[in-house]
Length: 434
Image 1 (cartoon, helix red, strand yellow):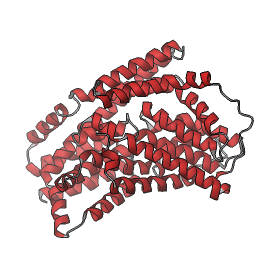
Image 2 (cartoon, helix red, strand yellow):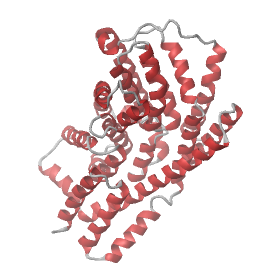
Image 3 (cartoon, helix red, strand yellow):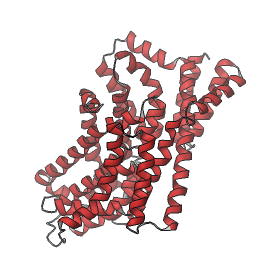
Image 4 (tube, helix red, strand yellow):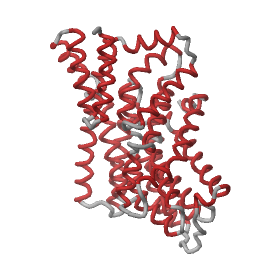
């Protein structure tokens, strides 16, 4: 076999190995290493490329954003700020049909602007919002579907772990990716709110529910007490990056310190929970470090094999338009989303398609937003919808099956697809703030 055939077989082998359960970085790194060795018949070259992949990725200064933003998100989550913002949103939306669902989306959007994790959002709001919706006779499928759908906001509204991973794979600025994610994230949240309103008006049986008349109100002081700490943290981090006062690394460090200060000031942080946050930060950082290193050598393997060039030649030969390229890209992501997690999809498809996008004069930053949103749809689709599994395991309620979670999330996955089409059609939505 020639280099191209070896590269093509390697991509297929990586997908199959991940699907059968092999740890993603091991599948990426091992197959890529062996493929380079076979293509050039040079073991030393494969070793040297592995060294370069390590030095050119995780040893960069900007990699410090990963542990800093991860630690900040964990501190916020363990301090119970997600529950507080949900309580405020619940008061604001309680008079509207489907109001608790809207409150969940609004709280998730704010929570996502700090944690950057869909899994954390799914876990927190499964235990907070779903019991509340069931208490007021909401359809169980709607209740879990709202939580599943809105949890994906954590991966598009900055700071987002997936945006950080993409920025390393595509060699883009983390700050630019964060800023580019603001409008698409808000757009997706608004689309969810409109969907819930429309469902409550035109399909009330799907939503269910009754008026929240017995919920206690809140004074302006109580609302401020619950929201100002989290909003101040968002302004510090995103405002610092957008204004240029802080680099992403400095914003992560400032945010982590400020989150810890708030938690200690409000007596929400114990020594035990602080230690747990440190340990989880280390575990998550090490996992992402391994991912980025493996993705780096995978990209080099594809370059040596000439797979992106061959794919580009095939597109030119068949005279595929931009629309056809994007349809092919989205369909591929949706297919992989039924098999793989978001990080795997980004690491596999971006090195293949990014070399095709740049010659067209399209922004790699815009392409990153499209990629993350497209890959995130996989969090809601079977058989590997991670957010759905997290919700089911967190609830531990025999009345709600995994099938209920997937069916409830399906309308929100469709809304995500519509928003993705809008983002592809109007790149300015992702680039307006840059």
